[in-house]
Length: 408
Image (cartoon, rainbow, N blue to C red; front, side, top):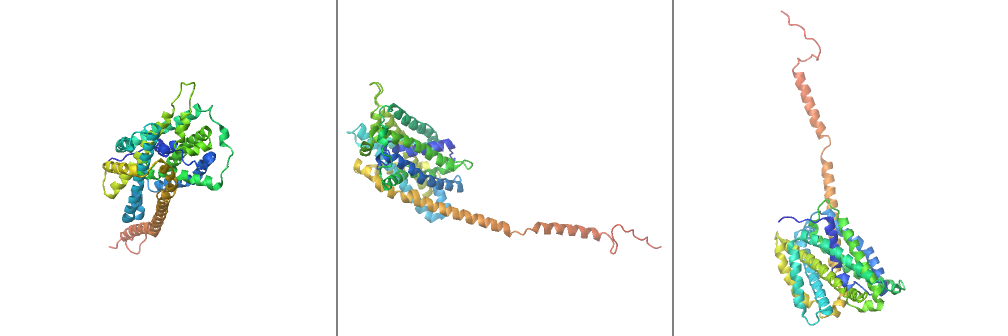
């Protein structure tokens, strides 16, 4: 199978679109109310070191994906177990995003429509994108990520006359526990979910910087979310912000410029659809590559359909209703720890130890070769030449001494 590659810009846009997939509409954690933007800033203090760890693994094993890293560091058996775990996480995350999408569409526009047809449509589009390959997804993300950022800034600009910046006060009104708790929820959803990007790390060329990819994607996605959160707080106020399931959509509904420019909330809905497609497609690729590794299949695209059908079957049963969906974020922050933190950290530590041992072994092997071996061989050849030269002359004579004439 031909190897697929992305450019650095495509990878950055892919991570940004993946981060903003559903968070730009759901709004992340709003527990801190008017201090939610502070929680988002503090979350970067936690997530940047995690992104550096992810990028470091890509640097240690360039053009290798997560499952190949497992095999190189832990061996065949443990790598199979860890691959099963990460495949489950990718499928489960795809099902969660599918359910988020169906709940969103049902509430805002189609309350009488069953959710399953909505999820089937979203799944089919995501399957098409996933089977098109990572290169196509990278080019698609180059459109989606700027579009999400543009619509976020545009809606904020159109709401400028209705934004009340007094809603940001008082600053730091909540305790450090509430603010930091909100920060960790934002880390787990959506930033640390980018651990699944490691499953397509083999699409980044060896000479490209993985740190630029991960940190650039994190900053791009973080800027979009900070604009969205500030817009939601100033437009809705802290009380309404916390009570709404889709605060970004509600904020956009407030736009009304002279009874002419209205119904702009459809832009926010399109953000969710486009970003959700990217997120689901990447989850499908992550799970498909894992299954391809487990079953020694060269073409991961053959696994996309089974993975997508599994996620589609799981989607309707992950939540009972939208209230459970909102409350699941508390559980998810704990549930995601092994997938987002523990397994990557163990892989990173194991990779560093393995690389250190390999470099030490190489240093020992280079030091064990005798440095005077070449000099011995050269001296041997020199002595051989000199002995050969002396054997051509009679014994007892030295070079340059005239020989006596033979007597008659």
